[in-house]
Every structure is written in C-alpha cells, then in structure tokens.
Image (tube, rainbow, N blue to C red; front, side, top):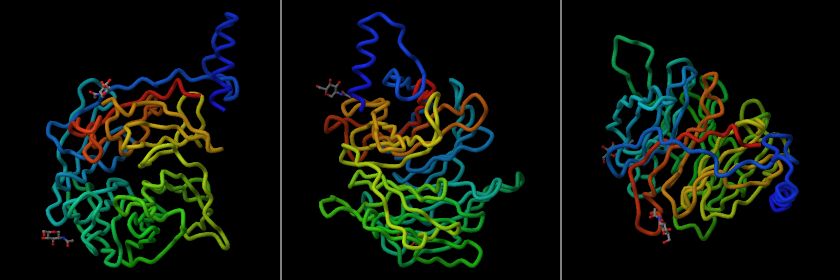
Length: 349
Ligand SMILES: *[C@@H]1O[C@H](CO)[C@@H](O)[C@H](O)[C@H]1NC(C)=O
Ligand SMILES: *[C@@H]1O[C@H](CO)[C@@H](O)[C@H](O)[C@H]1NC(C)=O
C-alpha cells in the first residue's frame, strides 16, 4: 500500500502538480521522517525511562526501570528549557514500569524488583500509589496491592479510579486489580499475549490500552499488535478471542499510544520499536510505516514509550521516552542516557 502511494506522489511530482500535503488518507503522502525535537536528556547513563504520563496541564511524569526506581516531574516541555525534578525515589523496589493518574493528583504506579533486564524477582511486583494532593506534605508512596503470584509487569490502564488492568509480560496475561478491596484476579489471557519461545527474555504482552470497547496490546518479542473485545469491567467479552492486527518487521515492539496528528485519526497507533530505535504509526487496518528514528541513528535511541501532549496547541506532539539503547546498543555499542523527544505529528496523514 505504501508503495502505491509513493508511486502516486512520484507521478504527481513528475507531471508537476502541487504535492498534496494533508488530504484524506488515500491521496496523502506524509513527509517523513516527522520532525523530532529533543526535550530533555538525562545527565547520566543508564537512565532507562519505562513509563510516561501527560497531565491535563501539560506537565509530564516519567518513571525509570534503571538504574533504580525514580519518578521525575517535567514542566515546560513545550519550551526550550524544561524543568526536571526528581519527585520520588522508591527505596523498597528498584524498577518502575508504568504511571497513570487514577484521580486528580493521585498517581498509580506499577513496579517491583528485577535482578537483570526484564527478569522480575517473583512476587515483588505490585501497584503503588503516589499521592500529590497535599501541597504541604511531601509526596507519599505506598503499596496498594502486591500481585504476589504475578511475574514481570510492564503496563496498566484504568477501568475506574479504583480498578486497573495490569499487563504481565512474563506470564502472558492481564490482571484486574481492585485498589479498594486490595485484591486481584485474572482478567484476560490469550495466546497472542505469550512471549514467543525464541525470545531471549520472557517478555510477551508489553503495553495495554482500553480503546472503544477493546483492549489493545503489543507483544514485545513477537512484535505483534492485537486486540480483544472487553466488558466494561475489563474482562474478555463472552466468546471473545484475540485478533491479530499486524506484525511489525522488527525484533521488538514496545509501548504505544493512540492519537491523531494532523490528518491522522484518533485511531492511529504510535508505537516504539526500542531495539531498532524507530517509531511506527499503525493504521486501524494494520498498515504501518516508520515515522521517526532509524536503527543506526540516535534520534529515538531505544524508544520505549510515548504519550501525546494534552494542552490545546500541543495535542499533535508525541512525547517519546527512551532507554538510550541500554538493552540494544545502536550499531552494537553506542548508548546514551534516556531522553524525552517531541515528535511533531501534525504533518502525518
Ligand atoms: C526488593 O529488594 C530489596 C533489596 O533486596 C528488598 O529490601 C525489598 O524488600 C524488595 N522488595 C520487595 C517488594 O520484595
Ligand atoms: C552506525 O553505523 C553507520 C554505518 O557505519 C553509520 O552511518 C552511523 O552513523 C552509525 N551510527 C552512529 C550513531 O554512530
């Protein structure tokens, strides 16, 4: 499909017609790669960012998986001089993987202990709360629910302020966690969530997102993107089975976000490939293309996860958090500290 689009634009340029910039999908050819601006690079290696969240006021929170469990707060990310502060250093666990805001100023964070890359210490992962409501008291982190029979957990999405879904990458399933009763149970399990037998580490289902009645997920080492219809409580709809949307040509497919930049639709998926440092945009029909980064370039080196800006005027900006090639060095040996880059998606269509 991209080949034929390229052919159309080649024809247009040969006959000297003006290039379509952002018309409906079929006749539109985005100018790639999309512009990338470095927002902030952390000072020390390794700083491996694993989770990012955009607040309604435009500020970002980012959590790290290496070298330790840190929560950073970033303001002014749409300017040339953002301010970055260390908000919390978790001392009871060494790895944070995901952060979401479950009610105003109350953040739910996923984390646990790991002994090596993607190797969880069994039974140490849990859902934590970081309460920023009181301006007079320092942020308080407390463990809400320990998923003691779980494995390596990498992402969450919210069902309600007291209920979240948690992806378990090593067990290949999704837990439903009740923050009020402090209990958890199996919500979803599908073969498309399993880590493939050839994977060097047990990392299957990586990121989850609820979207229009479906749970979507990426499977890291299978490099697949799938979905399943779910009930409002986040369980598999009766008789539902996983549906493969696409397999990306990559050895890894990390986290993703939904969003519409420019002529994109709100159903476009923006996913990081981490191992080969690219960002791909996946259309609802499974067609995808690389929109930023390149396997031998540092532009989005080891991109892990991303989130769209939320303030008016910034909603076309896709903020990508990286690990700097920590697991998969660029050209085999080049690494850098994690960073946050802003991709301007307004030219995408
Ligand atoms: C994580 O490891 C540290 C150091 O071994 C230990 O003190 C802590 O209790 C562990 N955390 C959990 C949740 O088991
Ligand atoms: C990786 O190697 C290629 C080919 O030699 C080179 O063009 C590229 O600049 C290298 N990347 C980095 C980040 O040095």
